[in-house]
Length: 335
Image (cartoon, rainbow, N blue to C red; front, side, top):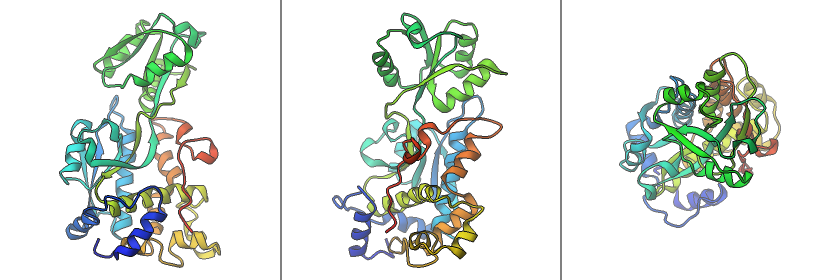
């Protein structure tokens, strides 16, 4: 990176968490390319389900926020819609600088990328469709799903509850909906976002299906970047952590101006660029996160826009901060 003195970069990388100082190859090349072209190229996975794409839409907003952290220009970003099958190759070739809300384990070119910051858990949910059924009643019955869904979590679900069942996989969501409405499935297994959309289609008006969330690490969606550029990893991780940190401290788009002008907390002053040079060694200007908060808000605000609106109503569950019982961890990186 042009603005990063190597000694200070090593120091910051060590402070930011388990990024590591080994394999420090091609450091700063991604950021240099971004600076030279004047905008961020950000990949979002095409994840439409019944013509709804809240994960893609949230990924798009995270792209725009990251671009605003790098440049004081909300338009300094090119969004590239890609499929999961070619996302790894496109990232490895440098056609995009980062993937927003991708599952690194499901991408090709496994050795060339890394999920540097998980920002959404879309783990598998099993929804029992028949009223009065309990999990034991699924023994010997059929659970329906899609061919594209990783069934590893479903096998773990069966082992946990000591039940065996058949799995009927359909090629499309339309076929799955027909199967469910014909009552040939006692339960449906889908990632939680798709499950929420699907259940609205099945029951239309109202219902209270029994839902079990699996606990595997599948479908951990995050900011995926090149595994060889440690400085770029540090920037993207810092951005993601700042979104979570601002929620933890209850700083959002509606109060950020007041907080910035009134706080005496030195950590918050650093985060908002009031004092110090937080992020300076990574080439970020002093107001980088202040801009992001003003325009996009903290993690909670971004989540609410895409998963708690008229189109979809999905409780945060594992996408709460760990302090509230979720899986999103804030590393306490401001010191």
